[in-house]
Length: 231
Image (cartoon, rainbow, N blue to C red; front, top):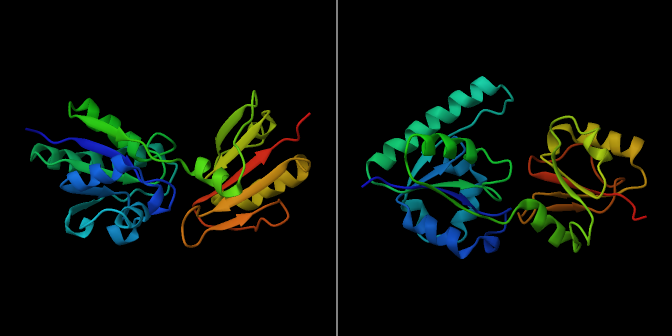
C-alpha cells in the first residue's frame, strides 16, 4: 500500500499553538520533509520539535527551495521535491511536510501537493494557525470588525494599488522590501494605523506599535497590519 503525503501547518512560531491533529500526524508519519537544506535550518522543524516526542528519530527529506521569483526555476524545484516524496510514498511510508503557519496561505508546500496529487497519490492538508491571526492576538486586536473588509497582501510584490483597498490590509513577507513599504505608508497613508510583528511567537519576537517605531530592515517572518481610520 502506498503512503500519504500530509502538508502539516505547525503554526506561526510558538510550539504551544500547534494543533493536536498536527502533532498526531507528525508522530504517525515515518518520514518528515522540510523546505530547507537540513532540519537544523528549518524553522518549521524547530517548532515541531517543541511538541513532537522523538522527532529526531524520524527520516527527513531536505527539500530546499531557492529564494527566487523565476517561475521556471521554481517549477523544476517543486518537481524534484515531489519526486523525492513520491519515492517514499511508493515504499508505503507516510510523509509529513512541515510548513510554517497554514499550508493554504502563501506556502511552498501547496505546489508540491498539487504535483503529487496529479500523479495519483493521496494527499491531505492539516491546517495550522496563520501568522496574521496569531499576530493580531499578540497585538490584542481584531483583524476586522462587523462589515470591514480584510485583505491579505504579499508585499514582496507591488503594493501601491493594494494599499488603497478599504478595511484592514495585512502585508505578508514584508522584510525584503520593508524600507520601500514604510516609505509608501508614510507618504500616502499617514493617517492609517500601522503595526508590525516580527517573528511572531518565536524567541526573537518584536512588536512595533506604530509606523515611526518600524525599522528599515527586519527578519524574513515579518508582517504589517494597516488599518484605515474608521469613518
